[in-house]
Amino acid sequence: MEHLKAELYSSLGRTYLAKKECEKALSNQEKALKIRLSRLPPCHYLLAFNYTDFAKIFLFKKNYDQALEYNLKALEFRENYLLPDHPTTALSLHYVGKMYYKIDDLEKARDYYLKSIEMIKKCLPPSQQHIAPKILEDIALTYGYKSETALNYRLEALKVQKQLTSINYSYLARIHDNIARTYKSMGKKDDSLQYHKQALQIRKRQSVQGCTHEGTSPGV
Image (cartoon, rainbow, N blue to C red; front, side, top):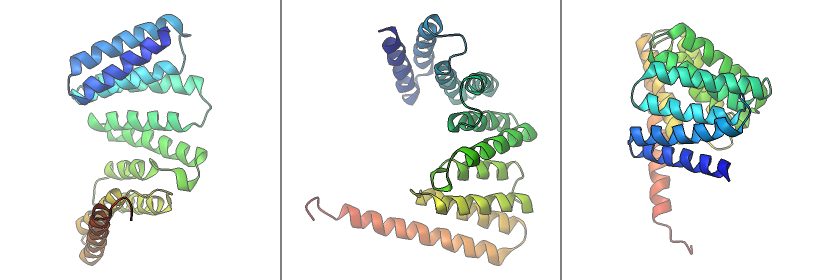
């Protein structure tokens, strides 16, 4: 029964955060954590979900140092409890990297991003690596837009995105735009134009498909 109460408090906390009511979100997450700490072993992996929820609240409040602290706690619990290479641990590595990026520690951000993408590639087939393009784009961001290395990571992100079983076409267009921006920063305007045009074509196709679906009645 107590574990259900803990889950309820966690759910309430997430709902309040979605409504931008941070103090109520924090209060409910604290109640959930208190229950779980009283009933679970000290290093149980379920506690990592609480710490991730705390991190999201502090991220929303732009308190990046505390968000980093809670993401590091969540990562520690997952590394200790789960298999050495696990998708959830890879996500934690990515979150930690994002917090280091927020506080302008690009080297540490890159280090965690690289660990994250390496783990994702080990534990998931290419068609299921849905978070991989975002991680690769984040690695590229640590190099800026005038770097051949950044370009290579963005091109890899594009390749991975095209291999997924379920393609996010909005994000696919965004990757094309970022590649175009990188080429432009490197002085390669023809390549930049090519990728901007491809991004535009993807968005046009999306728009047409959206109109088609809206105009189709359920019985047709």
